[in-house]
Image (cartoon, rainbow, N blue to C red):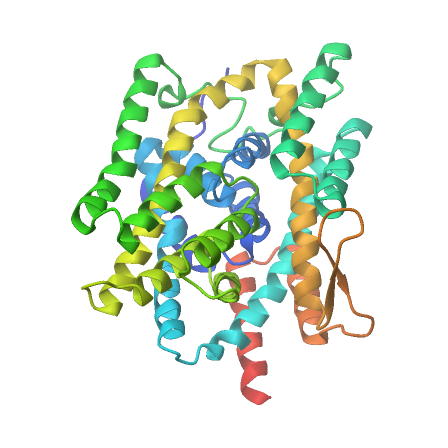
Length: 449
């Protein structure tokens, strides 16, 4: 093993994670694309193989995979404090913005003033995602087996509607079996590219804090469960088990554990409970929250903050509606995101071990190929809704497929998307400048209409 490259200063990482929290638009596909561009391509803080290795693990977990990827990379760079800083800053700006928009929605205030800016941002993210898919796909899809896994995963998610965990599990199983029958069929993520110049790369020896041990695992498990549950148990003890805040603490903690497949899987689960089980929102309320979440930075799963705020605002008990709403948002966000840190800090050291196990590494390599197909399906769905004014939802084989209306292209969005793609792919413009330019373009269009 060669000597590790110079470490990344913690201050530099802190400033990057803070900036990322303000510009991580576009849902998981856009956020993963932005992190890949910044961390792998520009800053070279982590190599391609290590990035995809971490992403493959995060895609297996319940919760927001992009935020968990940020926690993982932050942990690799600067231990637990790095993971905490990365994970918190990834959602902190969107927490405050969603809190403001949730209050505006509850108070029947006008929130359409943001539409122009976010229309430009959404279109720009389309171009960024396509550029990232081309980069990652060209490196991860080496050989017919990997390409076949990616295409099959895309079809399974986008057309057939196979549950996300089954797609990932099937890809991993196929990669493991293929490696036993014919070694070398699947390329391991760490072998996808030469990344010796990156601060975190496969050529360097594992850092001491990434090594797994039974003692460390027990400590992380006890600490993580305490951090997750003690604040929520305090709320339950204060308000009583039948209070809305207590119900939110219990429900969203359970939702965090059982909902795989990203924000849209969570949305279906939350919508059924919030509307029909608890009666917190009207049937269209959760959809309105998702629209706000799609218009702000941060994970789409921030829709849970909207639900938590509105539920507590409407059923506030002996608290003022605004205070109850703020507490509901805090309880919901804590229950949703606190477990994500536990999953990473608990599992990442064991995932790091797989870099030395070729058969299990081959399983992750196949999962990496599947991830390309899954992200492509998310990107296509997102692109269709952004670039076309009329979209029909159809179910040809099982999945709900968005079909664009003929002649309904939104030319402004198409031009911005192409400009974003060329800026990233061809002219190598800093993604931050691309995001800002797209937002200003959307604002200018809204002002002159």
